[in-house]
Length: 261
Image (cartoon, rainbow, N blue to C red; front, side, top):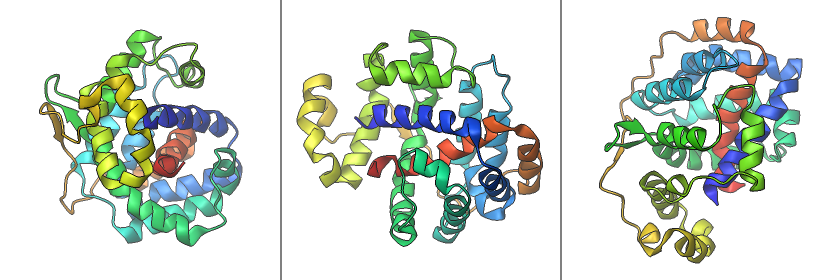
């Protein structure tokens, strides 16, 4: 399922990023300091990556996404610039995640096509608890496992994806997941058509009825504003932040491929 694929990618991304090449690190520093990345709230990514290794990453994720969702969307030209820098500098790391960068033109088209959907899903909010859906679901997973820290995230994700620890059903089949599934199935009906019966069997027929839950709100801004407090500060902090920042950025960017994985 989409949720399990995203978890697997996150865990793999953090594992790969423990040994980033100098070329990839330089590319990520360049991206963080570029005006093109302002729409991704790079300062929020840096703050997240600087989280104490024993502290939960969830507040940092929430802060990063809250800032990202308040900004306007990235333009296609910005996405192209970010994508080009990362695929050129981090081709080895992306390859280890299973993504081929040999056909850059088609991959860029996929990125431009997938980005609005991914951003829309990242910015879903559960009004019943006044939290972003990503934040809510991460807390549910943390409550069912252990504190999600930068140092143990790979292990926790491994347990979830292997089945040794179950993803709570209130996450898999909750209103947030239903909203994400509804958006993805509307944008990519052919891609998810084969999963409808299995998802319905697990989560119930109402999960796949195509209706957005009434308590889920879309918060992604359509404004053209992309100020994130200055991009050069993000680059400076990134250069000092080490592998955890590389992990966060690599996972954040490579997540745009999840729909096509």
